[in-house]
Image (tube, rainbow, N blue to C red):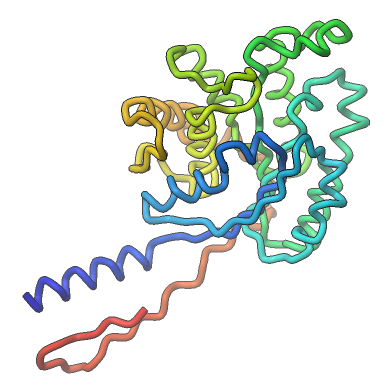
Amino acid sequence: MRKILFILVFCLASLSIFATNYKVLFLGNSYTEVNNLPQLVYTVSLSTGDTITFTSSTPGGCTFQQHLTVSSSLIQQGGWDYVVLQEQSQLPAFPITQFMAESYPYAQQLCQMISQYNPQAQVVFYMTWGRKNGDAQNAPAFPPIGTYEGMDSLLHARYMLMAEDNDAIVSPVGALWHFIRHNHPDIELYSSDESHPSLAGSYAAACSFYTIFFQKDPTLIHADAGVDPAMAQTIRQAAKQVVFDSLSTWMFLNDDSVAVSEPEPLQISVFPNPTVQFMHVKL
């Protein structure tokens, strides 16, 4: 029995050695807040032996410009490994002149602030998705966003632009949704307002973020987080195809960029040594 207990303790200690914990700051709005996306990322990560410690700032409809004020103190705390930036859901898809005036420069300013106070951190742009049937409200003034495909393609392009110009990373949630919509149309990613995510939609987002943060295959995830198990498995497989199998597509990092720091290894002591009856492993 003592031998079995020792083996169990040793295995648990070994898992702890290889587990990774990142400190993540999520800056967004209701798209991040609905279904508590940061908690979902924590849940799916923990199921693989990894974890995140997170803080979020998600006022409804908040823009990058507003985050420069409302979230500056969180950025300036320092110590973050990743800082996630999610713009107001429609703004990046608006005409290029409007986007370049009302979104792009504030993304740059946020990235500069993050770099100043968190030199080891990586910025992750949260690529969102087109509304289920496009943005009907603004389509009369700008027809390209009147359909899902039109709005989604613009969001994709603008988030990729902001990430590339700021040596950042993209969590391609919008691209993953696009793949699921076309290949698994039975999975409902939207809530009833045809804009915000359903639980399945947020689960897909969590799988994307897990893959980007840890650069690991999302099919390793064992947590369904309340999603139908078969559906969750389909979403994880889609995340592997879209995100994990194309990691280099989503990372715009210069050769001289600073990589995310790995946590310090655990200190382990074994006592007494030699042992007669019981052995203790201290982490």
